[in-house]
Length: 139
Image (tube, rainbow, N blue to C red):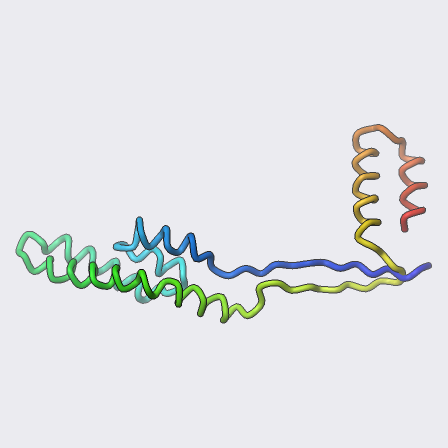
């Protein structure tokens, strides 16, 4: 039996800055962008400020809470980028390559050929005997 080596690329992605800013823009007063970024404590705080502010705005004290939330919302425009970068750095790995070795050499082109061969077999273009014969040649 010959040596085979298969490479598998695995992407581990962090938080998306575009999604974070869209959440900040449309749902920022609810603190949803903070929940997305893993900052649940401050997300809950923003949500509580909004609820208390809305419920007490009829006695004017609520505008203080809403004002604080508004200032925080504006400041978050500058902080979201930093929070996303910090989170993605804490993940540490953006692109990782894992190599799995087996006896034999296996090239990416061979994998592509096997996929094509399997597709032909599934479509009924070639029979099982032809499929197995060609598969054995590739491997």
